[in-house]
Image (tube, rainbow, N blue to C red; front, side, top):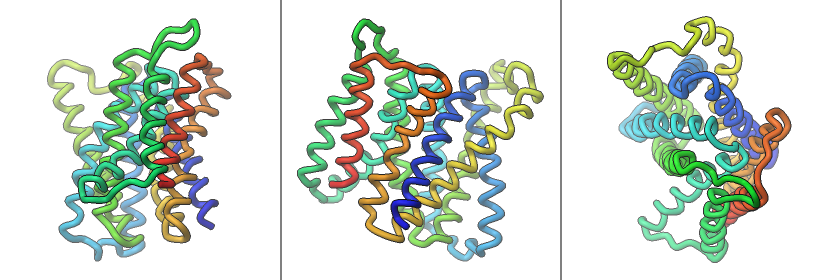
Length: 288
């Protein structure tokens, strides 16, 4: 069942990224993050109560709280990057952090990467350079988009490392994800409050009616992200973690295909090659 759960993870993460990027093209990134995570809090709260996950509470939940703070900033950067640049480039680059940061943490703790991981690092670096550079006859990805994507990638990797420390059981994972989402909402709400006091409108253009009309999509984004975390955990516990990591890391393919099919998004030759290499580098890092 590991491949089934891992591929389901890739599908849900990929569609959630596509939906988030698409919505951010007509709603502020903060609105997308705040509302989608608020809906996720409701779903996770129900699961925590139903499973009795409160019994797993302990000092490790501080890691989940830290993941919530970092994750909010990462999501804001990532959705903004998806709105500004080609999703087929942004998504693979953003996926790098989910594997590269845990590998970096392992290096600091004394682990040494294998040959495949060294190859993955080299391939990923080449991919980043090509994906952010000019295509054949096309303009380069904006520097702002690249910076936002790389910041988001680092944030996503940090969140994965923190969540791994926050729980060591399935019910513990539910509680950790609930705490993470609560912190997401708290941080997002604080940012919204501060920005509104500085004169930025608290609601997007169109007011509550725009948010209400987008609620199904926002709910899908939040719930798909939560479900993907759950299926990834099931994949990792039902078989080899390396298989789960490799197959789940294919989610940028889903995002790119959705952008190609729905938005008719076209990438320049070198950008497509770079995005592909970034994805290959991610897979090599995971398998190493």
